[in-house]
Length: 246
Picture 1 (cartoon, rainbow, N blue to C red):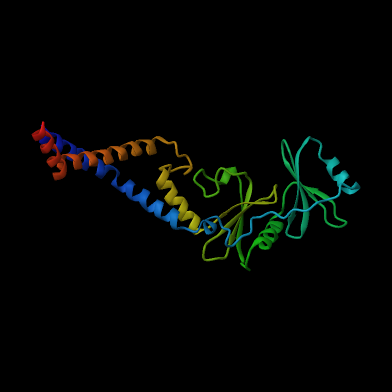
Picture 2: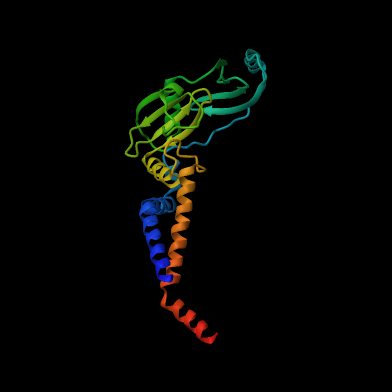
């Protein structure tokens, strides 16, 4: 009986190993890459300063007139510096406004232009890097698996002429850098996709594929422990001694 059980367990363990061995390899490679990587580089902090520069402003007559242009309740107001411009980022329930407060220039706009986006990104770079191209992305020309996902749209994708193929994503209506993506991040993202086994959005860790493979992984481990118990000479000696003593 013990021999039959041992052979059956070995067969099960072997097929389980074949089934999830590759996934075990992906989990291990991913874990090594995640733990040995420079997360500042993954998040683009080595090239781009994503911090926002704020200032205090006076609620004077020109500013009051600017606020009067907004005809709906205001949710929040942030004073930010974008390149050389002092702006107020005003959020309402339906849209965002950018109020320009430079000397003798008070105006309301709903988004930055492509030229302003370029200037903004260049002002946030930690070193002089040329801009290769600028693309405007909306819901219509972006997929679920795109590297810029589950974030506010529309957005400008500013590609830097750099060996890391860095792209800086700037929301024109918020005057804000929302993401920085480079080759290091893309490798990280690919391995993370294999790690969580979500091959579409890459962020959904409660998917059934991962659940099933996790259970199979446990079965492989426990079958290995059981095989050790069945085939270990030490265990046999202990069992013999217990039988003899009893």
